[in-house]
Image (cartoon, rainbow, N blue to C red; front, side):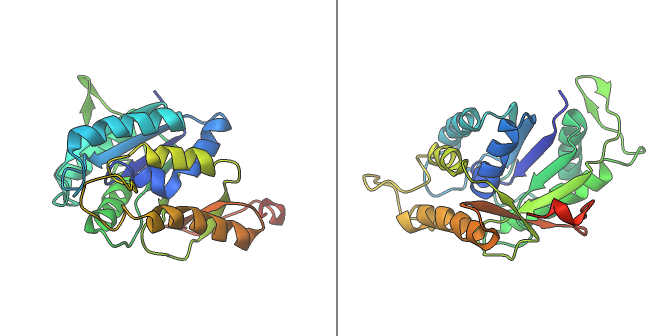
Amino acid sequence: MKLDILAFGAHPDDVELGAGATLAKEIANGKKVGIVDLTRGELGTRGTAEIRDKEAASAAQILGVAVRENLGFSDGFFVNDKTHQLEVIRMVRKYRPEIVLCNAIDDRHIDHGKGSSLVSDACYLSGLVKIDTWADGKSQEKWRPELVYHYIQWKNLVPDFVVDVSGFIEKKTAAILAYSSQFYDPDSAEPETPISSKNFIDSVNYRARDLGRMIGVEHAEGFNVERFVAVNTLDDLI
């Protein structure tokens, strides 16, 4: 299956938090979108890997993504090396996306920065013909995505561009809250974490509202780039 967009996250829920509304909008516009989680989030303070597997499936259904896979890397301990790069390359070559989204370039959780560089490096290497990878008993053809974008996570990084996601924040919120083990629940007996507070969930919305305010729309999501943002004409900017 060829996808238009493939979004990677170090943990289940990273993609939803960083780019859920953008993906929902792209899907509504007819794009084929997939998600690949690098780990199962097994080191998370709340819940279990098995619970998060089910939550990730529910979130994917809410967003309407065509496929979701998990590479099963070690939460907290995966590294950007040949072994891990080859696994990511297999996903890129399997789905042949034009656009890849991945973790924030710099962030509070160490896996986010590692995931960012791992996926970015693998996207480049995936275009080299002399790197051999196999899937389903067949040799894969080289493939390099046209664009790699990094969504913004815990830290308030300054985006290089923002996407108008007005009308899609509700779907993003529903996909996030599918991870009921992780986020705000006043009746939960689980330990408190930085992302389990009501303030954190509220911050996802007010960040989107603030970015939207900056471009004159209701809600927006921000991204960082690895190369100059190019437009065909001045009219391309909104």
